[in-house]
Amino acid sequence: MPTSESSEAIRDDIRNAPLLSVRDLEVTFRVEGGVAKAVDGVSIDLYSGEVLGIVGESGSGKSVTALSIMRLIPDPPGKIAHGQILLNGQDLMELSYPEMRNVRGNQIAMIFQEPMTALNPVFSVGMQVMETVLTHDNVTRSEAFNRAVERLQQVGIPDARKRMKDYPHQFSGGMRQRVMIAMALICHPKILIADEPTTALDVTTQAQILDLMMESKDKEEDSSIILITHDLAVVAETCQRAVVMYGGMVQELASIERIFRDPQHPYTKGLLASLPSPARKKMERLYTIPGNVPSIMEMPSGCKFCTRCPEVMDRCHQETPPLHPVAPHHFVRCHLFDPAVEDGVKESGG
Image (cartoon, rainbow, N blue to C red; front, side, top):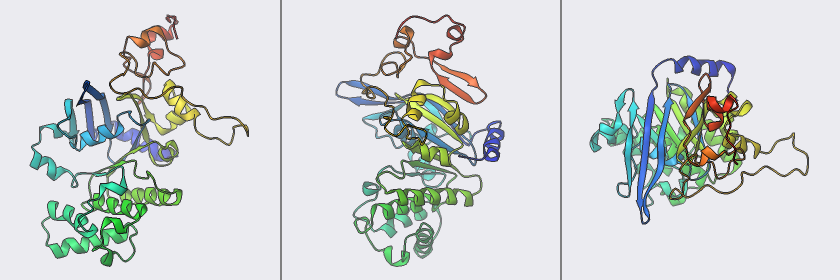
C-alpha cells in the first residue's frame, strides 16, 4: 500500500489543476435493439505523478472510458455522445483527427488489454516499435531503430537487436506485453493508460510487468498512470487513489487507504469481502456478490447496483443517486448517504 508520504503528496496535488480531467463523459453504442449507454456521466481527474486505479467487474465501462480518452471508440457503432476530455486544459474532443493522432503515443499512450492480439501479426516487432518514434519525432530510421532497440532492452527483451526482425507470433505472451510497454513508453508520454496489463500472464510475469511500469514512471518526471484492473491487490500495491465503476458510472472514489480501510458503497464492500484473507476460517466460503452485471441494454433506471444490493431501498429502483461527499476527497454514489436518509427518514423496501 502507498506510504503516507506519497498519499499526502497526492492530496497536496489535488489542490492544483489536474493533468487530465474527464467531465460528464457519455458513450453510446448503436446495437440491434437500439442505443446502449456504456458510459454514463463519468467524471474523473488524474494528477501529475499519480497512479490512479479504475476497478470493477467486466462490463462496468472501464475500458470504454480509457478508449474514449484516446478517442479510439469505433464510430460507428460507438459514439462519444457528451462530455469533455481535458488534457492540461485543452479539450481533446475539439481536436481534428491529425491533431489527435499527434497526442496518441506522444502525450497519452495506452497498453491495450490483450497482448496476444494487440500487435499487428504482419509487421515485425521492430517496425511496430519504430513507427511510434517515426510518427512523433523528427529522426532518421537509423535513429528510430537504435531507440527501439534501447527501449526493448530496458523492458527486458533479451538480444533485442536481433529480435527486432521477429514477428509477434515468435514472442510469448509476457514478451508481447513487454513489447507493448516499450511501444507505449518510447516517446515519454505524460500519461500511460494500462488496460489490464497483466491479463492472462502468470504470477511471476505479472509482478515483473507491474514493476517495469512503475520503474518507467519514476524515471519520467511528473508522468502519471491510469491502471485498469480487476485485481484489487494490484491496486492496493501500486495506486494512490481508486475509482470503483459499475454500470458505466463511478460508484466510489477515494484514496487507497479509505477504499480498503473504510469502504462505503455496498458494491465496494462486496468486492473487498470477496478477497481471500488469512483471517478467514479454514473452511469458510468466500463472499460472492449475488447475481450478475446486467446487460447495458437492461440496466435499471435508478441505481445501477439496485438489483444486486443487500441494502436496497424503494427509491433505488427509480432514482439514480448522485455522488455524495462522505469525507474530504471521498465520494460515494448511494442513497444511503442522502442527508434525509442519514437523519433517519428511510423508506421501506429491499
